[in-house]
Image 1 (spheres, rainbow, N blue to C red):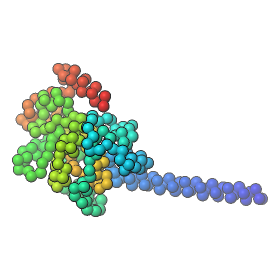
Image 2: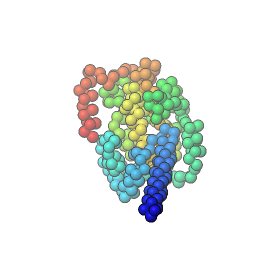
Image 3: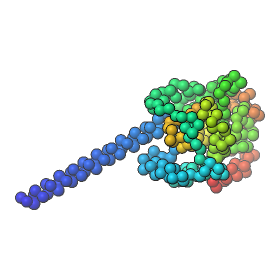
Length: 286
């Protein structure tokens, strides 16, 4: 009888411990879900992963000053996958948050995302091939180019292809940026950030088909911008970023007159094989 009572007590303790563990796991799962929804709301992609443990570790590293100073020489970027928090960003300069230039007013997140969704400067859609970015049509980009002289707001068209592709033919007014460190220098080091805060600057990325290089650079900018402004989320230096749907390949077929020079050099052009190999090897080294 006594042994049975002891067994019952142990069984109750086991059930209580199991229920406690289950409850704790449920709470962690809910917390992760909240974090994921907060991070991936709209098309926004947060810096690093959504895993809470890694985010906490990375936040600690950032607070302890593991990132290099703003004066760090820019080097070519490396693939983010599989690297520690400090490794991912230490090769780029430390960018001050928007709040250093302008106080950030507290706002309800739902209202903020609703504002962003309803006040986009360009009509956009979500492509099935790259659903996490804002895609715009060639027609809308041409309309934007035609209004450049009338616009107070500035915009940049960023060609993410290799230089031989860009030199062979690109969209009128596009700047050639095919490496991440070039993008950081162009948008955060060479730019007057105080001026960027007080006006919206629209960016349109593209590559040959806008399936790999363009979307990759788009995501990198969003990640880097999030990192710079992690203390004043959800503010961004560059909230208005877009991807040209189907890339230069499609744009050239529709609007050849808007290309300079009016020509199209594919990435796999036989006449540029050695250059392609050279650029790819260079990127692998970094």
